[in-house]
Amino acid sequence: MRPPPRTVSPVSRYHRACLALFAAGVATFALLYSVQALLPELSRAFGVTPAQSSWSLSAATLGLGVALLVTGPLSERTGRTPLIHLSLTLSALAGLACAFAPTWHALLGLRLVQGVTLAGLPAVATAYLREELPADRQGRAAGLYIGGTALGGMTGRLISSVVAEAYGWRLSLAAVAAVGLACAVIVASLLPASRNFAAGPHVALSRRAFTDPALLSLYGIGAVAMGSFVAVYNAMGFRLTSAPFTLGAAAAGAVFLVYPAGTLSSSIAGRLADRHGRRAVLPFGFLLTAAGLLLTLPDHLALTVAGLAVMTAGFFCVHGVASGWVPVRAHAGGVPAGQAASLYLFAYYAGSSLFGNLAGTAWSYGAWPAVVLLAAACLVAGGLLATSLRRVPSLVTSP
Image (cartoon, rainbow, N blue to C red):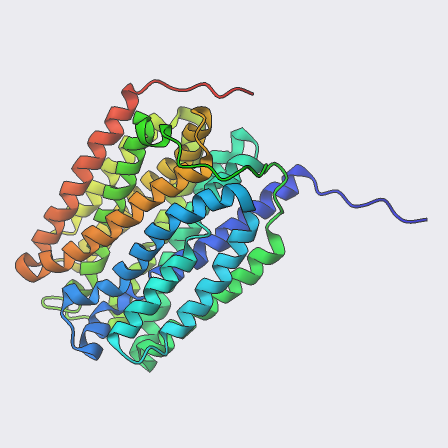
């Protein structure tokens, strides 16, 4: 007599999904931002300016942002989990290819390809969470996923900076690619298959995705929040390796150890959003980010590191709440969740590309105060958008 099939309890399924998407978030940000700590090294190796070196990051975020406009709607037909698995595997392989780039332009081309392959995960992660998890746990799960991206950002930058100082930038990128492959294996083992996904015919982008005032504000918040964050971190490597700090690559890369502050804050923000509402938590995230930014102004290493920690906590608070809000608002308004998530992330990575490059120009013309001014302008705009959301009526989701 055959034993009855094993059933997976909802609690076990919830934890497996959270752990898998946490690992997926680690891989995504580790691969995407592996070059950020290497910008001074790449500038020297290829003989390019600081502004030009930032294209090694912007090329990937640009490819990612554009590809999101395709992968989001595509996931409404093909499903969420196949795209997640394919995206992680191809992105890690592309990262390995970057380590062997023979020229500057070849590296930029490979980074562009890597950005395209990375688009399969962020396009569908929050939509997967909304479909597969209970409503009262979605905020916490989204916060944990964003926490994984925070840890990945630290891992990629830290590994690349330490390995680069000892063995060069090529081996550093290969090491981060190995981390990406390991995470892909974890996700393949843990991520539960979709149960509640219902494939539909291909449809054009919903008009409401471009007219709903809350969604438009959330897209804008993603763009300026990420823009300020990347601007600061792109220029930070140049600041710490220049006078008055004059740190080495590994020591400068050690400042990325503040990233667990983002892992913690995104998880806490998700719980607070479930309890008190997203409208209350989001403006606080911008205030926290701005406070951290101002702490980096004095030429004092301890204050600069503390400011980065506070700013990182504030940014991931904002991003964790906003990115989790988008598919919920979209579903309530009759917009396909994958489409809305893709538009949010398109704006998010467009802001990264635009302001990340402007940070190099700001550094060249006005050093750190100019970078802080650029980031502060983004945060003011985001704070105004977050405040405006408090006046936008809620949409009631039918059971």
